[in-house]
Image (tube, rainbow over all chains, first blue to last red; front, side, top):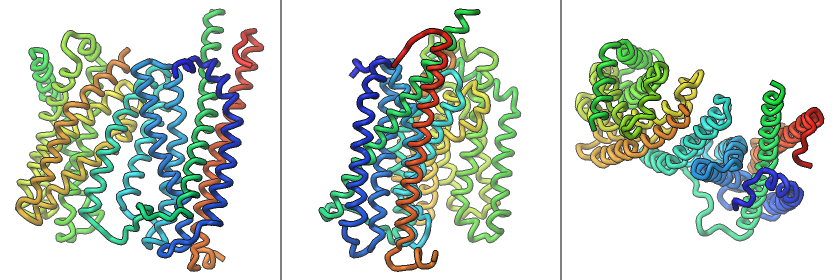
Length: 241
Length: 222
Length: 57
C-alpha cells in the first residue's frame, strides 16, 4: 500500500485508473437506473415511491462510508505521517457531505408521501442530520486554519473523535426516538427484500461507490497539484530572496 | 500528582480572582431561560412540560460559551506552552484544568438551575433529580468541550468553529440528561438506568477526551 | 401541472424531483472538481515554464 505513498506514483497510477473507473461508473449507473426505474416492480405498500430508495439508500450508505474512509485516512495520517492520507481525508469530506445532503433531501422527499410530512424526527434521518453537522465542522477546520500541516493534524483528530462518537450518537438518537414516538415508521428492506428490487439497489450502490472513487481521485489530484504549486512558489521565493 | 493539584488550585484561584467570566455565564443562562416564555407563550402547563429540556439546553449553551476561556488565556500569556513541554503528562494537566473549569463554572450554573426551575413551573419532584442529572452529566459537557477548545485554540473566530464542532457531540448527553428527568416524572425508578448511561458517558469522556485534547494542543503549539 | 405531478397516486413528482436533484448535485460536484483539476494543471504548467522545473507529464 505504501508503494503508492509517493505523490508522483499516485499521479501516474490515477491517470491510468481514472478513465476506466469513469467508464465503469457510467455503465453501472445506466444499468442501475434501468433496473430501478423500469424493471423493479412497485411496492405493494408504498407503490411507485419505493423507486426513491434506489437513490436514497446508496446516498446514505456513501455518507457513512465516506466518513469511515475519512477517519481511516486520518488515522493513517496521524500514525504514519503519510502525506497522501492527509490529502485523501481532506478530499473525501466535501464529497461525503454532498452524499449526506442528498440522503437527507431524498429521505425527506420519500417521507412526504409516506409520513405526510417533509421532515420526521425519525432515528435514521436525525442521525444523518448530525452526521451532516460533523462533516460541516470538519470542512470548517480546513477552511479556517491556513497552514496545511497544522490543519491536517487538527482535522485528523476531529475526524477520529467524530468517528468514535457516531455509534454513540446513533444509539442515543434511537433511544430518544423510541421514548418520544413510535408512529408510522416504515421499515425498508429487511430480509424479505425481493430479488427484482435487490439487484438494482446493489448495482446503484456499486455505481455510487465508483462515483465516489472517481470524485475522490479528481479531488486528490487537484490537491496534490496545489501542494506542488505551493512548494514551487516557496522554493522560488527562497531562491530569489 | 503535585502538578495536578498545582494546576487545579491555580485555575480555581485565577477564576475566583477574575470572576467576570462566571458572572457572565450565569447571566447568559438566566437570560436564555427567561426568553423561552416570550417565544412559546406563558402557558404554565406547556412550560412545565418543556422545562427540563429548556434548562438542559440553556446550561449546555452556557458551558459552551465559557469553553473558549479554558485554554485561550493560557495560550495568550504563553503558560500553555510551558504546560505542554513540562514534565507532567499533558493529559493529566488537562484533566486538572477541566475539573477546575467545572468547579468554577459548571457547579455554580447547576446551583442556579432550581431558581430558574420556578420560572418555568418545573414540577417540585423534578428539582432534585434535575440537579442530580446535571451534576452527573455536565462533566461530560466540559470534557468533550475541552477537546473542542484544544482543537480551536489560537484560531481566529475560534468560538464559532468551536460551537460547530462541539454541539453535534453534545446530542447524546442532552438526550440522556433530559430523558432521565422526564422518566422520573413518570415513575420513581424509571430514571435509574438513564442516569447510569449518563454516568458512563461522563466516565468515558473523562478517559478519552483528554487524550484528544492533548494531541490537539501539541499540534496547535508546535 | 404541479397538482398532477405531486397529487397523483403514483407520486411521479416526488420520484422526478429525487432523481433530478440527485443527478444535478452529483453532476455539479463532478463538474466543479473536474474544472478545478484543469485549473491546477494550467497553473502548474505556467509556473513550470517560468521556473524551468519539470514535475509531471
